[in-house]
Length: 266
Image 1: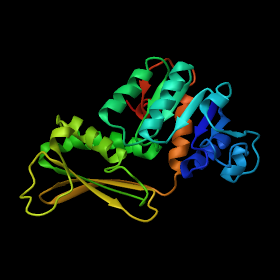
Image 2 (image 1 turned 45 degrees about the horizontal axis):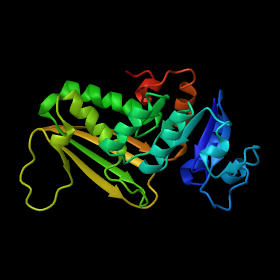
Image 3 (image 1 turned 30 degrees about the horizontal axis):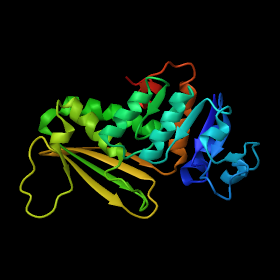
Image 4 (image 1 turned 180 degrees about the horizontal axis):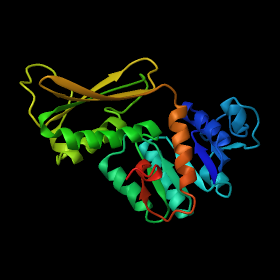
């Protein structure tokens, strides 16, 4: 599988270039940077700091359409939908790690998966996706007797809150408990809020410094508390997962997939 990385000059893009270069069974086919960037024409490996790879950065997907089989996209919701439409039109697979998509944008992404295979997950980390499996099991066993609170922390530059991963954790727990997260979620508390209700799922958000990503889910009742925690210390964790997803897509039919499919956790 030949991988294209969009946003190649960003923090995540550089890690994706390295991960694609180092992984078995895939190769870096294309790297896309912003139109007008001084890095157009630069070697992707030099952009990522690993030396020349022989892949020259271009300014658009149209400039490299013949050079890749699957696109990895960690950009913004609007740009991701543009890229997904391009991939669907040109029969290219896409791996989407973009967060902050609303319900309409998720529906649009799903519509593109009718034409080309899509892996969409708010977190590409292998560990996080194993954590989701553990959360479902814990919620099923513990039931309504345990209060659920989700605490997440990220770097100061993250623009969406709560994180897509925290929301997905909430969805997994709510589904296991037979609840609708839209009805039971509580986002932060301030003032005289009164006692928590039995079935609410609380979210607390921290934005500070250079925190890559930390998530903690509490299951608490009278006499004990269980915490399931995941901490990421490097963006390479997400990059490796995304490259693994890209490789997994080889030969897959057009459909919407997630990392639980990739890791055979369903």
